[in-house]
Image (cartoon, rainbow, N blue to C red):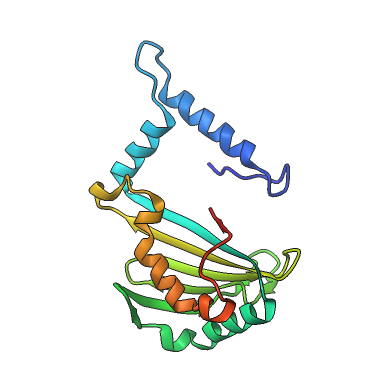
Length: 185
């Protein structure tokens, strides 16, 4: 079941909490057995299906012109990046994502620069101009891990190599003067 709704726009965390309460109730039907925790459920899920490590780095308040130049450079290089080897990764597809709404067929272009790797990992960059001053560059990093010995790693350790590749691909330090995010989620 989904964990989102439109009851309170972009603040639907309560639905995720209710979903977890329902899952816990289903796993804990017999009070005579030990309590099954969220951690037990999650680690059991990872053991069966593997784990997707994910994080987002936000670079807030960067110069909008410099950030736009960085995005434009990545955008102009999408075709030549497809098939390129960077670190231990090979880029299967690099593109400038365009979203087409399946219902009303509206099209939103330039929704992010995507780097999809041959192993299923991905790095996505988006530029947002909604910050109070300057712009925000968002860097999304995701990698699947099926090796049972690596399922309990810290997210930062599990994604370290892919983060280095992402920073190399965007050259945010060269364009914006930093590769230290203001927020990591």
